[in-house]
Amino acid sequence: MDNPNLVLVIDMLKGFHDMGKLANPRTAKIISAVRELLERRVERDGWKVVFLGDQHERGDKEFKIFPEHCILGTEEVEIIDELKRFLGVNDSPVLIPKTRYDGFYNTYLDEVLSAMRPKMVIVVGVCTDICVLYTAAGLRERDYQVIVPKDCTETYSAPGHNAKRVKRLVYGHMKDILGVKVIKSQKEI
Ligand SMILES: [Zn+2]
Image (cartoon, rainbow, N blue to C red; front, side, top):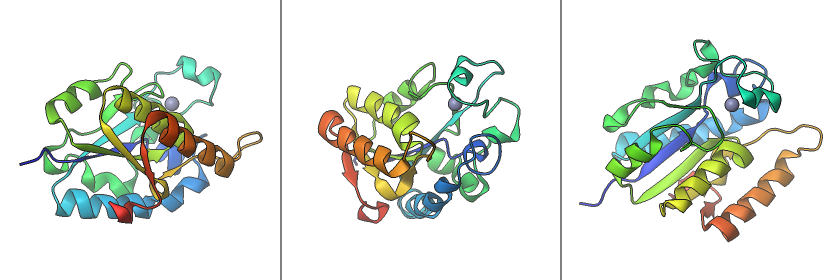
């Protein structure tokens, strides 16, 4: 039998959705699409799921760029309530902590994937142009097939950072430069 596919869920944490300085109202609209994908493909069909999530120490160098967020030991590092029940389903590893944009940097994601050898990796979560992009790049460098459904990723809008424009650029980059299959909706998977 083929190895199961994998859904990689990035930073769907309370600190990016519900509370703290980086809570982002735009991200609420992807939650139901991510949940639907996990219900269909993980719960029903037995695909694997791996959660990756920020866990920073106080004074982390990333806070020179972004406001302080997702400090280890705070509620911000928890998976949002809507997706908590998928943790550990189908003997998948639970939440893998990370401290940088690239989900492979200083984490055990590489080992988990080497053991799992998924045929396809579907990357979902936030932010499209930060952790989703850098982790998708890490996956492609390791020759995994990657799919990104647009209705399952989101980023923030701020002065000089227009979410719509940023996403358009990043999806093009993923497709043309990284060889990621970018699709409109998780329903196509
Ligand atoms: Zn962070």
